[in-house]
Length: 618
Image 1 (tube, helix red, strand yellow):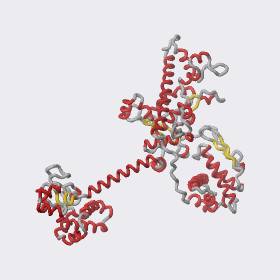
Image 2 (tube, one colour):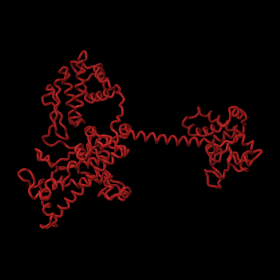
Image 3 (tube, rainbow, N blue to C red):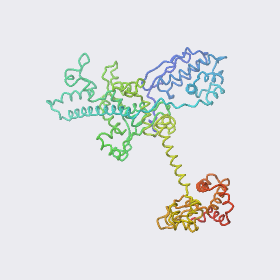
């Protein structure tokens, strides 16, 4: 689903952040992160190239640091900065070293590629240099072709990011559900207590009156009464202290992180994208009471670039039927399977924090520490590593097989996508070639499914091609002991006798009973095609006296193959030919050759009628 914000002009007096504070010759690029406002300084003054080439590389980096670039974090910008430094070192060691950008040749680009022995490293670094130099008109045409038009090494699928096992997944989900349940009950109780006070339902002698008044003060001012040392007053201490009172109306950072992780799991979105969700959203289903409950939430993926970073995520509820089934297991079980219900609960629990702080994010929470800036008490920043540490999960790199799983947001999304098996904020090709392709579980399941399908199709083909062939030995036995031969053939004696006399012949085989057909109701004459259905019927029996017409039909079908459209021939005649080949395989080459010479004009006329469709019931 596509979407985004309305186009708007910058506010009055706005100017873009300075990227070259000392000009190009100063060789310093400033990168400002959009989300945090942090500015990072990248010094290019020591690049070992001539000043014109250095200034050119600085200009390319400065353009990449602009608002139109898809780079939004300093760590991402640093990869481009590092590849520029590597490129400058290569140029410095080349003979001759270019004095101007126009002096760069295809040989310089080849030398840069040769710097990296590992194909995957070479692929990554060349791709990064392409990004830095894309659209540059100062790069000579020969160097441009060598950089942009040569094929990169094939990207290998990384198997380092694997899905969690079922046991590890349940441990993570249990911890997340516990956090959500605890903060839900706590904040709902606090909101209810505040509502009772404001409605006048709490008398002065009520034990809940004093904490309710403190909550009211906190909701109006954003803080509680404090002593000179920053601690709570005696009244605050009597009601449990600052922490207990603040947490009655606000989430902790760890609890906000639990919500973000749970929403990332249920939606399979990147947690970095989910963490920036706003509280404002649209409900196309009206009040939410319709059959399809969904909230449309605006989100950003800066890596897509300024033209495609804004999009709309559909946060859906469970179908009514599935919600009913889950409610039978546990009353709040649907909550932990519904992205919409989790999102709505999050907005409910963070609404007091938004009213107090004026922030608009969905994950607003209050820190208990007293940082230098008072406005930093309120935040919507999540910290996955801190949540994991406080919940007993080790860092991903230190996790042991016999201990709790390490929390890795990449593995969380990998697991969610393997469960959902549908693209989320990416193309179907990305899901298939990147996420599912590197999954051992998906590959094993795919092999199993393909093997089952192939086995089933081979079985069908063999069964379809199999017609019961009565051998000459059985017919000789029937001439002396009809009942014994009929019992061996699984037929009634009268039926076998009529087959031997030719009374039950169809076009190329015999029919046990044309009024007991799988192609028609019992008692109704079979309307099936002699060519396409008789050879795939349990009633069909092939006898030696039918071998001449079977060989002739087989030869005619083979003769048609080079004279027809291949697809049309396959559709019409591939299956009958395979069934005839199975029948002919019961006879020796000499028997087939003798039968070929025994075919009569009547046989050929009948074959022509079969192929023209004149024998089929209209």
